[in-house]
Image (cartoon, rainbow, N blue to C red; front, side, top):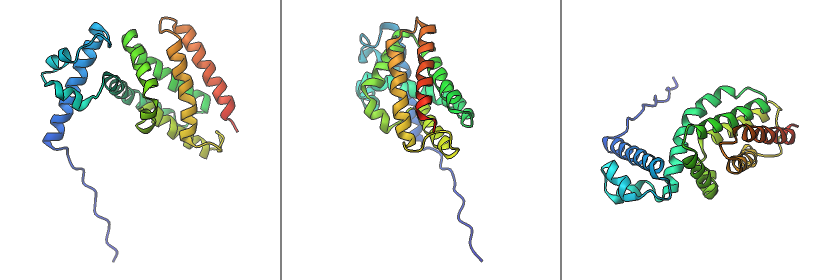
Length: 203
């Protein structure tokens, strides 16, 4: 009689891991509060760690630079909206990509405009790192391209990673060039990006 494979048992995080994550979140929240209060450039690490109740070295243990704080913040924000985007995986390319753009706009709109712009600049500045550690919305979009290729809705001569890498820089460019205050024009130009991109990936 063949033996069944052993059941996988979820191992809860250790107390030390939980404490490390709690400290990371506390530093992240203190840093973002300070960024919103005085601006990213003017924010001082001394003020952040004082508010978080940790040593200065703890900040750099978790976040080598302020940019890494911004990237962590937007990544966590995207985790929440990426779950909503996953509900659109069966939609046609134009509808899915428009949903992705709309969710990215929503993430930015929930943040102070000055801080949101600094986040976009950090993303552009660390584009190579983000390719290795993708943002959740980019991860879901890459998965979408894979599925859409299997359905024959998207050209198959490019990999899903290549398609995502071609799409998001254009979106980032519009978000950087068009101020959040020009919401209607920004949305119109992003819709144009979606339209042009979809025309290029349909078989």
